[in-house]
Each structure stands twice: as structure tokens, then as C-alpha cells.
Amino acid sequence: MNGNPATYAIWLAVLLMIGLHQDVWNWDNDRLVFGFMPVALFYHACFSVAAGILWFLATVVAWPEELEALDAEADRNSGMAEVGTEGGKES
Image (cartoon, rainbow, N blue to C red; front, side):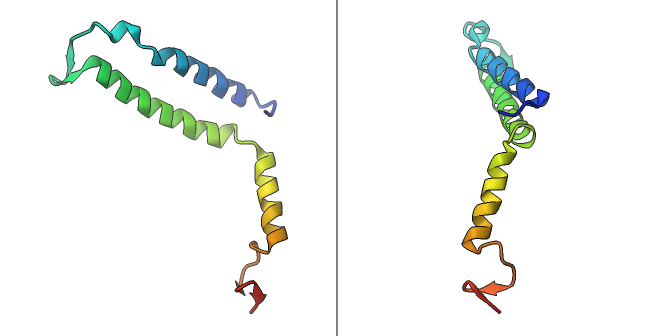
């Protein structure tokens, strides 16, 4: 893990999401949202959207740059990074 403060913020948000996933306060709530959806189902739908946004932010902010460098080096070594080649041979 790099020393980027945003990386620590992402980890804190993940831990917060783990805690919020246990929505015990909605278990006995029988209210309906929009007149048809149980509040616990609506909560989990919103939670899923928030988890997707958090995962996107994690890949943008906290993705290890070392992996990208290793991938680029592997592409160079395998010849996949060559542009304008056909079947691995120069055109």
C-alpha cells in the first residue's frame, strides 16, 4: 500500500461500509419507500450503488502503480506492445 492519504481514506470508507452493511436498525421497519419497496430493500439498493462508487474510487485513487509498471514491462517482453505488427512479425 502506498503512502497516499487518499488510499487510507478509501480503506476507512471500506471499513465504514462494512459496518453500515449490518443494518440492524431496518430489520423491524415495515415502512414502504415509494409506496411499494420495503425500506430495508431500498437501503441495500442504495448501499450497492455506494459500494460501486467506492470501488471505482478505489481503482482510480488507490490502485498500485507498481502493477501497471509490471504489466507494461510484461507487454514489452512478450512483444504485445508493438504497434503495426501482424502475427508477431514486423509489417
